[in-house]
Length: 172
Image 1 (tube, helix red, strand yellow):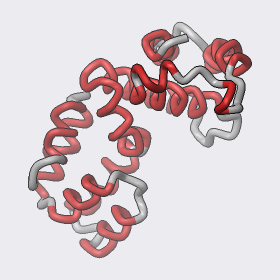
Image 2: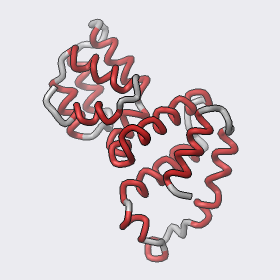
Image 3: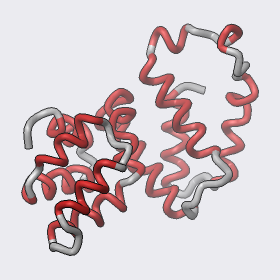
């Protein structure tokens, strides 16, 4: 199975065509074929398309985890966001934004509460510091004003992941 195959399956899961059990079952051949010993593993995919390989395995393990706290509906929304990100921005950008994509709903709520004054600037900065987001995204968030945060959330909400990633590369 390739990243494109996995994205297709995640799209079908997001659209309700596959159950979570069926999605997980589709991972079995790939998981069984993976030797777990780096010395016996095929290096070609990692050399030819390292971002695709890294994203592929991160997504397989993410959706294969039995102990996910999210319900199936929430996982479907996450799968939809991931599929839209790969379609819009490619594997490297999706990998870069993965923590923010997975944290989407919480991030949106925190930004909204911060902008309404419910969460203080110090509280917001504390959340950002502990977020697991990439260092450049944390730096951007630390310096972003309300308008910049609103634009970022809107881009993420609209599935404009390439724009969101590009915005994080420039000063807010």
